[in-house]
Image (cartoon, rainbow, N blue to C red; front, side, top):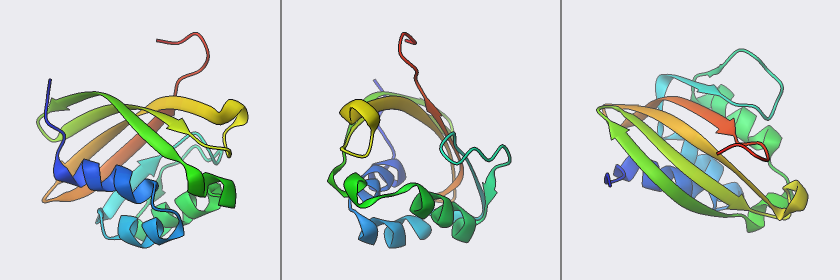
Length: 123
């Protein structure tokens, strides 16, 4: 078992903090950070904190403000941290979804974040 870096713990706390969490998230990303995600349909990564926060904001609804994220396996390989998660929220069809986040942390900031969703039947 690996310890999760504080930057990642704070990321997941901010994700569950409702609208005020977006302001907290912005300060967590490096100036040249990139975020790849399956929610917007955009194939290119979002680049820079402002674009990343805009992507988070666009995917949020008031129903997401009730979200609870349970963390699963954590794998730390140097500056690359992979965290499995399950999110419970009214905003998600069926009330829950799961996936993983792959973070790259540099100098105490998130330099890269890739989110993937697990579809039914995937491990």
